[in-house]
Length: 170
Length: 352
Image (cartoon, rainbow over all chains, first blue to last red):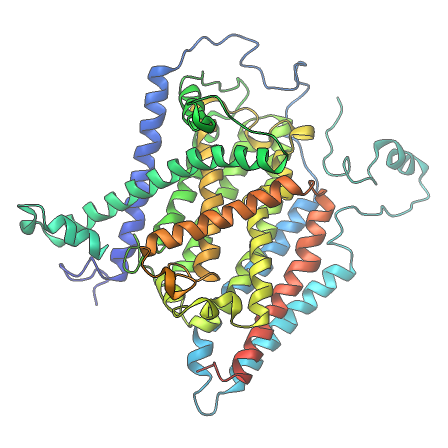
């Protein structure tokens, strides 16, 4: 069985439609290149040392910006992975639900299977909720070590705004 | 596509073309058309945004460029941006820095391929239409992360990290809110979804059952967050992050981000129209004389107006409120919408 459709049917076949997507990519790249070339012809070019410096509100930049950032972002990425996969599983079910429901012997079973699947995942959501991993502003664990506690107060790590990212001071 | 093929066949000498050549020509024309639509979005909606902002804040907005209500303001801005110097910071990661805006724009353009403008007038009539749109539009997250990381700028990095966290979080309720619609249609094809809403306003999916009504608003809120606008513009908070992930970008490269932002604004509005508000069908039979594509676009522009209304009315939320809203309110509510719609379909006999 050949994967390619016979010649003459490409316009209506599924691969044909994805070929359209490929052509969209090519056309998009061509337009992007065109716009950049036109801009290159029109724009001035006189770089100097200050202009090429990283923008940091007019001050000289301190250190590299390639810092380690808060682990919360990775947690969000993990949750996303779980729930987006769930959505991907839901789509095929949603497509066949209407068609399979009238089939004798299936009926409401089609529905309840998905309810069970969602219930299992909701348990996961409830778990991370109860563990406090969905809290963006986390209460730090009280430790007897006083140096950490001091940092919390001064560094403002418990407040909303500053808690988000940490720049290592050098 | 069929309409386009027929049009091309009317050109003398076009009969001899093979199907492959014909297909490539049609697709290229559609792609060009979609790119022009994107550019028009950026032009028209920047002007509209300023006028709407002015209207909501009891001022005029642009009034001078081009005499009549400053209609040429966006064109003047575009010409100015073309003539701006292109600055790539010394410390930036050049390859990623250059490629990021193109990726963001490409992700937006690809999603336009599956938008059904009128019966039979869709560039790629994919069976996976809706899922394809969400799949390619999430390419923007990668582009934004690339832009923020490659700039080697602290503001840009924080903006990108926040933007990525926000966009991936809100993608879950955004996709979940569309599942009830797919259940009612039994297809992911974008044209099938619109055709299933034929026959007046009450057949639109938003009015089919109460859960779909809720799902529409969930989609709308998640859509605002997904386009990084409105009360959810955390990645670009100018008071704390300068301009977020595109702080270092100038000239044409900045314009790509801008183009993608306004194109996505219209895209999200058009998807809302497509899946909840009847697509190209007129609300009442009296309006049937309007061409389908025009009905579709008018509804889309109305949704964009609603989006701008929200943006210029509500204050910006905090990051923790943003995450709270997504994970603790919208995801549970959309899950209930999915199950509720299933029960409603079974009870009302609409399943099967």
